[in-house]
Length: 242
Image (tube, rainbow, N blue to C red; front, top):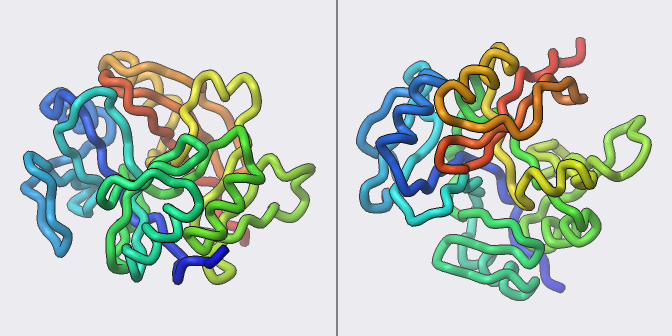
């Protein structure tokens, strides 16, 4: 199989939701977002708005039919080449939206401008799957991302996805308890100072707690759904090794 001229880099997120006003209010209260008309080099979809955390771009929001969902946006040098590679690997294509054969979806955009990680902003991305070997093959063949098990890991249930040797995302093999709670595909992690506080406030704002706050190798996390059902994770990243 021909590989694409990737690597692709997770570069941002877009919330597609049937109630844009409710979503704006929820994330403003939860993550402190403010909003403005879309700006930048990439065409916005009709009705879209840009979210900012501390004055820095955090996400795009757009109206869409239910179900609500968070899309991970992958920045690539050649969108058409990646689309072609995805099609050869069994993906369904809908413009720049790619629905992979394992049940995950992502969006493509040309360029290398990425959302900067930081408080209230996407700071990590993971692909969640019940078929890790197939997912690793797809990501290598289509996106140029090589799966690598971290040193000391007991098995391959978790892998880092490497672009030119640098980790840019993760791949998690969903254990049975989580497979029924979390959707297959790309998960966005928003950085917060206190995941326990955010998890509690999300429920008071009409969201749902899917996975209670817990410590993992990458930090302290909690998985949530917003009032329309879009799933995301908040994380207090673990301190960088000295």
